[in-house]
Image 1 (cartoon, rainbow, N blue to C red):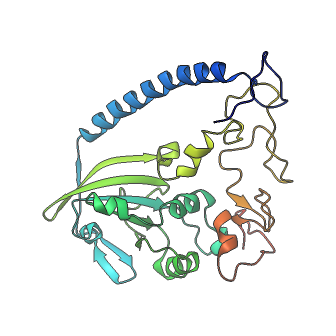
Image 2: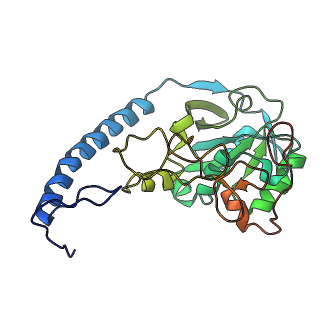
Length: 271
């Protein structure tokens, strides 16, 4: 790496202090100690997670997918473990009216080959009726298996927006773990990359120094510091963050047939 050495600190508005190469290495080493401690604690938490007690579920519960109705155990596809993401669904909404946060999760894990190599299958469950879900999955170009769990109780049905892990022994299936909210972030790797940048995620909850640049004003209920989590997950066709009438989850601007919408339904979602 080529450094321009400075004899004294320099100020660049809205950015960290500029220092010489040795000072940068010293500061990085101090942070590395904290990062290693964080990794060690994360490993300890993962070990505790692996010993959580299990809950047996009805492996015969029917879910509906591309090949019709199947027993839930079939989602393991012959493997010992299964991870599912429970995708929110708005009945009657067009493709662009579906959840932007769930879109970010589903889009981020479009290929589970590395999970499969470790004996783990992956599937998406949703409370939507399969007659609505199927065209949406095809529109988005998703190749992961999707299933409707409409009418089923927890843990397969019920509230959406969470990750669940299951293990199978013969014909018996057990729930081993569940998380929601920021607990699903391991799927969305782009958030971890943003956390490595100087400007971070540019969301209002982050701890940043005074004078850090504000989130660009999107001309909507978001924009500026104080913006909610995921303010940039829904944009207009120019890439401006908005929940307005011409918005849709970010990946949908690359989908075949995408076009701006003209109105919002009473529930606040695009129609």
